[in-house]
Structures are given as C-alpha cells and as structure tokens.
Amino acid sequence: MAARGGQQAKNVLVKLIVGAGSATPSPPVGPAIGSKGVKAMDFCKEFNARTAHLTPGIPISCVITIRPDRTFSFETKSPPTAYLVMRAAGIEKGAARYGAGDKPVGRISLKHVYEIAKIKQKDTQLSGISLESVARSVIATAKTVGVEVER
Image 1 (cartoon, rainbow, N blue to C red):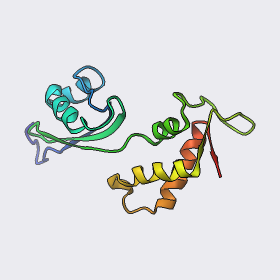
Image 2 (cartoon, helix red, strand yellow):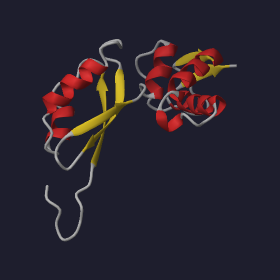
Image 3 (cartoon, helix red, strand yellow):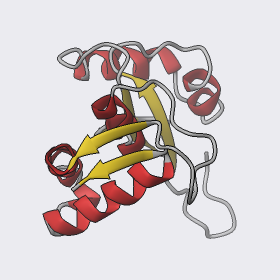
Image 4 (cartoon, rainbow, N blue to C red):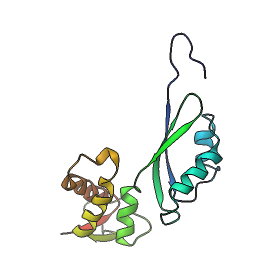
C-alpha cells in the first residue's frame, strides 16, 4: 500500500479468538487476515507453534498487527473470562438470560475467582490493575453467564 496525498500507511489491528494449537486458514482466521494481504497459513503456523504448550482448543484471544508491507506480529492473551468461569463451574454453556429470581446454572468459590483473576492479571492491559479489581470483574462476568459465586 503506497501512501497517498501525504498520508502515511498505518498498521491494521485484527482481534481474533482462536483455539490453541488449532488455527486453520478457514474462517474466522483466513477471511479476517487474508483480506488484509497476509497469508493466513503463515499466521496459523506461528500461532499453533506459540500455543502448542496449551490444551488444544482452549480459546485464546490474540491481537494481530498488520504492517503496510504486509508483515505481521501478534500478541496472545489469556482465554476469555466467561470461558474460564464456565470451566471452573463445570458447565459448557452459560445462561442465555440471568436475572433476579433465576436459578444459577453453576457455582464457583471465591478461590476460583481469585485463581481466574491471577490468570487474567497476566494480560498486558490488566497488569497495572489490582488483583481485587480484576476479581470484581470476574465476579461480574460470572453473574452475567449465570454462575453464582459462593462467599
């Protein structure tokens, strides 16, 4: 991409959630980065190598930075909080709708909440936030998916 009219070409950010060790050039990966001029297979090989130590299929958030020369770099993050909460509760699916008077679909302890908060705190965007604040966010996510936190 050449810069036009005095404008400089900019990096493009693509955010994806991909199963650890199981990235393939098919959707959602292929169309998301292929349309930006990056070979999806190159990303998939590197992503799978970087996540090979994790349990296959765990959803991993990643942010891909695509530069104007079509080279890329990416940062992996921890799995989504809702996934970690549901896994700790031993359920596969959260509640579609959860409000006052509804029965919870699962339960977790405060110990689970703090373990999840420790995992999430390792992400760069949460590194400066206190463990207590991250734990409060985990509790809010648990409530959203219908999981009750036992105090």
